Length: 520
Image 1: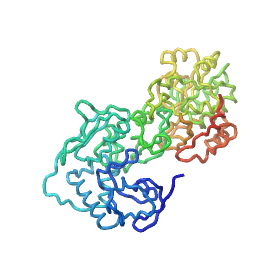
Image 2: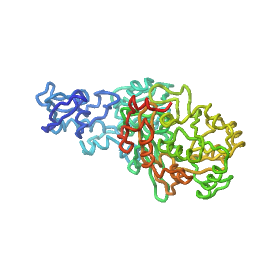
Image 3: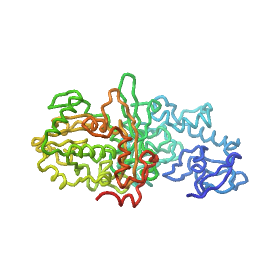
Image 4: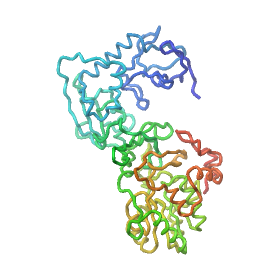
């Protein structure tokens, strides 16, 4: 545990973590020091001067909080007139050339310049000359649009491309009022994390081409979740909105801080997977190519399973722990073989050693926890003599190729219980829609053996059943997530010491002994 020190802020004694800079140290106890250029992942730059604070009996008496460490007995002054004047002056300087286009700015409602103007400035402009005009709507590449007029030169974006991605596409050029952020000639942004500069920008200078002018920030509901674009399990916010007379739609994913998993960032590819939650969804039950009611489709699946000589249940590496356990119990009751073959979800060589992983599924680690085989050999063995295959959201066409899948679908009765349209839904004798992860809840284990949970984010006007509900309708014994978790804690050795009802928000790392209990 980090050492604690006691210091004073405006005469009030607070206990903070020793050695942290003052912005982070006193921010942890609820005291805000305004700042633009500082960011915990990028370090202190000291260029904006918004975080200047007074130090009683200090030498010097005025210091930047981002570069000043918390030490025992330090007396920090935030409310003295000298500091208030500095904040007024810095804000006035930032706003000299800043366009007053808040009504059409994508950052409105999430803008630190707006917030600080209201809290620390609130004055009318004294400018009597025309502001310096700069370029607008510059396409920096990778879906990033830059408005130089709005930029306050905090340099966060520049430092991100130099310190984090180490690609260095951005720089600050020119001097004085002409200074601006720009790309080097002929070298647009070309890295897989470029859209993080939009999140880092404290104003509306960096915007996403994909999100621009689509929604207002204050209309969006911001729900916590886990990205399922790969096995890293980055923490995200799902920003969604239900407009009048319309359905609940996801408009963007944003990174959510988790020091253990993804820090402050997510990759661009994972960020864009929100589109898969909105588009190309399987929403109607289909039997023999014709739309039908869910109850009729469920009954058709039950008839196929009960009349089959050999049944194979194919689970997905994106299924949650609870879903996998429920399917296992159903497989045991139906005397079906269960397999997790999903080689098509792995993109060899695509990982980068930072966040992006080769495995493009969210929960493959749970196969080992539950003893589910996923090799091609195990799939071939399971398929030997099988006449009915029930896929629980496993896109088998990804692993076999479309031609290979089509050949298989001609030989057997294929049932698809999933979220999306595609070859599996088109070729299925029965296709049953289920809720996607943004509409459901569950537990995942990421590539680093960290157990995480997410809750329901999006509620549709006409919601489809969850996978657990469909498994129950097919004859399964598991009623809900709570019952599945109780069964997991009771019967799975790797989870016997874990309370799945009390997993912390940052996740729970499986210990060496728990990993050692994972089935071979």
